[in-house]
Image (cartoon, rainbow, N blue to C red; front, side, top):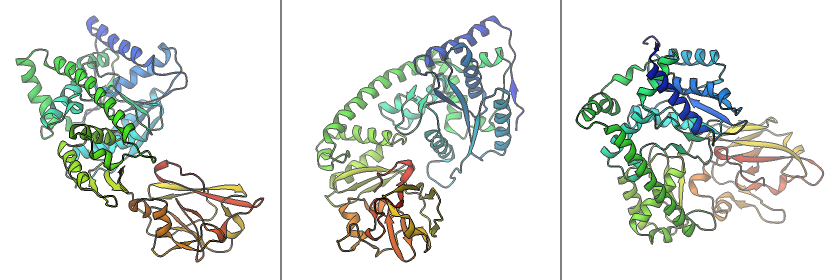
Length: 464
């Protein structure tokens, strides 16, 4: 590992430049955060994130808004120096009294997306689930320029040409913000010099094998030499493209509202009636709204081709590294890849919750609802995955029925059925997630009960 870098500066112009960064952060966050807001910084320990965290730490006092500041470091385990970087981040945050969370991730080296993209996907998966109101990343204008060029060279559309967004709301996670996106790295270096900061240097940043590094070290210097102000112009163009992308999002939202079925999903028949350009725009909008990366244009075209052939009962599946597009009962479903399902029984001995297939099953103590508690004391109680042939009596006085028919009537898609938890008491099936409690186990009024609640991916189902 290269020794942590540092910089010292007494130049007045650089001090003014550093103050410009502080002013930018103040004007950015003042209208966004409120007392008690939780602001987390994606902290790699590199120059940019060190400057962002340092400035925000000082801003807690000067801004006059008592927000809660923390940091999160993603340990990819790719570099032999990864442990040393995590140690640097830990020591830095301890000195600045900033709570730090370190998350280790497994980065696939076998996929078609490449190591750099796989690491980015793993990192953003952590950011997506960060427990904060705002997650701040230290991307700057030079990063934006590189991103725009890379996306254009990949044949991206308007959304890709817009580069990185200054702010990206997430449905089930913190708002992702890039408050330094209008600041050049030169200004960031001035701030580091003015404050005598130390940081770590990722050796992979100099590896020209990576396309972004090739642009940064080879293409951009030539471009700046031939076209002075090129980076500023590209950043300005990205802002204009971003405005156009917002208009396309507004159009997609209008189309979605018009096409939504009673379940809130998009109906296939009406979707196929859209003009191809609007269908592509809506599908891209849905994909991004699910928290996935912008899909490749070829992927969108293939999806439209398959959906145009889809029938009422057919199931279409197109997969990327982020998720899948499926069709069920004439409706579109965009889902994450199915997590692993336990292949062994999970015993229940009174636990308040048990992990299950990327989610969890809660066992809520109650009275007069759910499963009669006294019936769960004598036999072995355990969670199992679907084995096939199970039967359940949904109501007293009605016959026992196959789970296959019950799940079909409940319109549970086939790919979700395999994930459902089954609670067995001895040799008897007591409860099925998404279906309910067997009539023989229903808790009568006034008696102690347990309500099992299946939460796939943290989204709670209604207690049945």
